[in-house]
Image (tube, rainbow, N blue to C red; front, top):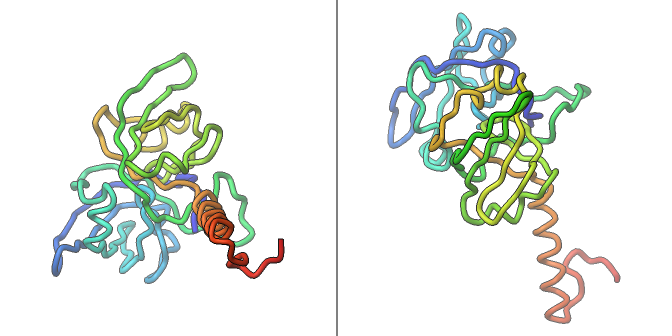
Length: 213
């Protein structure tokens, strides 16, 4: 579990194809590797990866073909910057929101609107994700916890402050660039629970969770 507060701007060192359609990713991140051990979790652009090895400020992680297909990690090349965050520790402050590191889809940056103190950035939503995105709700973009400023049928906008523009990859993204999106998991749980309840009511059956209403 993560919080969406990026700890370090890392760098892709190498991408090595392995058996099948998977890959071994090597990432430079002196801060996040300072206490990393085999089996630890580190989010790379919002994707939860398991540390295979960590040496001299560089960690490696296996990336399955499913992850490469369903995220923007497959487009990364040596030298590319990436947002890094270690798994949250129990008892630590929750600065962002609950982030699983499980990408729901790949979005696309469609416009940037600079202002004096911030920048409004708009992204296209993959089909099927718009129902989970609400104004003033939380969304994770490339591992960064952000608040939705506006939402449309197939797009949404966020406001980026100078700190976010400087300390994450979002400051250097261009129109057309892909980004990893993770919607608020609470929205998906609510949808599933309400869906089951409405289905029970429509069929006249007792509530599937055993509740008496």
